[in-house]
Length: 228
Image 1 (tube, helix red, strand yellow):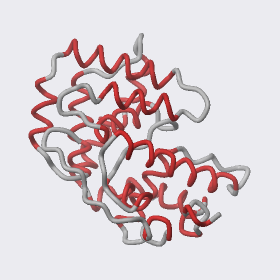
Image 2 (cartoon, one colour):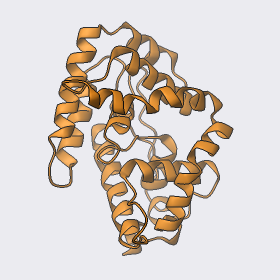
Image 3 (cartoon, one colour):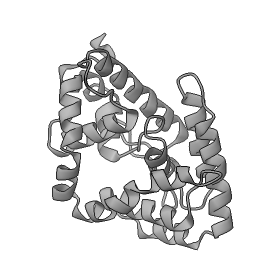
């Protein structure tokens, strides 16, 4: 059904896979500061999962915030809040969030939402930053709530727990429809793959073709000076 946009030609497996393949190149051209932080950010996932129990270290949370702010709108106070967090608090909360994410079953909705909520307990960390942390550790479960992908998938920017659930479900629909028609030899798209593909298409001016997103009701971006 094309009503929800998941079967739109612009979101076919081949186009999404091709856009995902261009991600590093487009990031370097459009967001050079984010590209500079990308190697350290991308290394967090394997490092976090190698620990017993899995967790994110304070320096890695700072790296994630630096990467997120350089890929989107820069909000220096958020970085200050994260730098001021105690190491014990970061380790406790991220350990709990990773346990919640890893323990999910079914479609993962409850686990993803619970993990985002846990990380959002940290000062300066809202659903969007929480999703950035989890996306690099659990890319199949949690997509990053980037401005561009939110606009493409939902037709709005909104950084609330409900918006995260809506965004994740929409990307699930897109991934499911695209993967159903993928060539047998090709790897399926994860939720994070879909987010990065939508980001590329939006940045390159090709992410507005979906009727579902384009026809969505326009809403004002939820603003919170302390968290996002």
